[in-house]
Length: 188
Ligand SMILES: [Zn+2]
Image 1 (cartoon, rainbow, N blue to C red):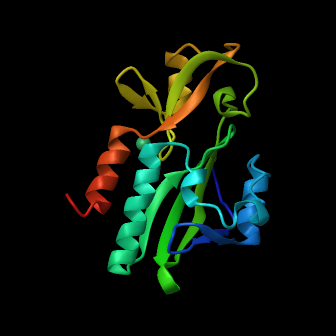
Image 2: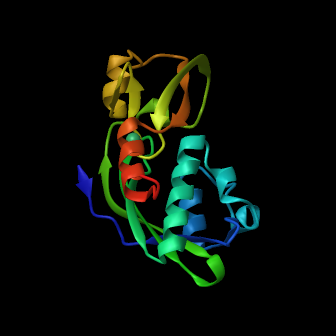
């Protein structure tokens, strides 16, 4: 079921060295609502953006976006998913250049869909030694040589009601990598 969402903007800025220099109160509220209460203005400002991005592929993607925005002094808009256990959240990230090499990231929720709770995406409880790979951009899960929505992955990997569940590790799926390289990589 698709639900209307209030138009909120979650904004943070990085300086010319890609360190976070400011976050808005709305950004802090969003972190709090999403089990990330450790992400406060005080705890993130002054720290490198890359430290908050779990995997190398996604870090590289952010580097490509930042490079393009600074080089061409342009604004880019990229869709991404920020799902919760009970929600598919379709978001949009607008990245724009500011003064002195600063860059502003503005996230907005475009659409949300409720779903049955997906235990795999709940806060980590007991997990076994296995891993499933989740694309940090589109939130699909790798099953064999395919990338599928998490609900389908749970069925295919026979994780429904499984305890303990495997751990989650993040990477990027080939579709997202290809799309972003096409859009942002100046060397292509
Ligand atoms: Zn993906």
